[in-house]
Image (cartoon, rainbow, N blue to C red; front, side, top):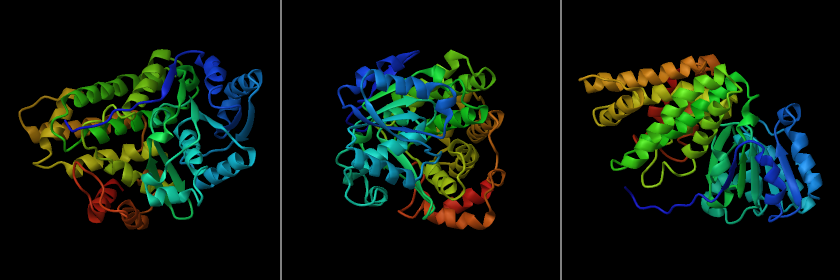
Length: 387
């Protein structure tokens, strides 16, 4: 196990009706709030009224930034920063899924940045020194953004989708009420499950050999997705299924699995290039690409890890290690397909003449991946195989 510093600072309020704690939590951060949310679902399910009523009861002044899109845009970030500066905002409340939360995080960091907020993604994480405090109310299980310092933003002009990472971006508190995910559509529930699954895999497939406890925790979380993902699809108001997926999403990407080892993230890098160009749902893109990444990196050197995965997660048995490894990959593909996810890039509208451009953008800042390093030609081959 490698050396590490452990910090998971977000206060989590998990369970039914935890929103009643919102006013109390906000008191320590200020009474002039930027309220960030998506494209209207919280108004349909009543959550918008609940939040604004709490603001009113606690004499909190709020200014709204609605309409944050999936694959959130840098244009929304710029708009939010402008509002924060004009209204002397003290704290940001993000109500929604990872897109809304990532937008809020970038606004929080951009508030203290003198230049354009896209600079933060180009100049590197070390340029982020300070951020406005953020609280979140989660309505979608998938990204884990409610409990980490990561944010991913798309730039439509440059067709790029890039990430920043800094502990100052961790939400100060996050309200996780599984009932708020009851109305998430079936395809989005499936995509969220794949996103969780992929986050775990990106950390599980590691060149660090001695990470026994991290591997066993990861395998348990993968099995949770396998068991409860289909239940959430067929029984959308099943509280236990929604709760298990919500908490798994948080644990998958709050640092618990990555501390003490090197992690990969090649598949995410490739998918970001795809969804930046075609606005593909992130989980759908990962469902397509992950099995093809697995097939490509499977080799004599990596077979042992794939066997561990196949045996411990999918209970695959056999004496031929390569056959066991391939069966684990096939089981992964079958799971995604059974969730209703697309199988090829063609299925989500990707055109073949864009593959090379996406490969170039994937490696624009260098090769991707740590489990197996991938250059442009490697990425292009994976994209062609997935096409």
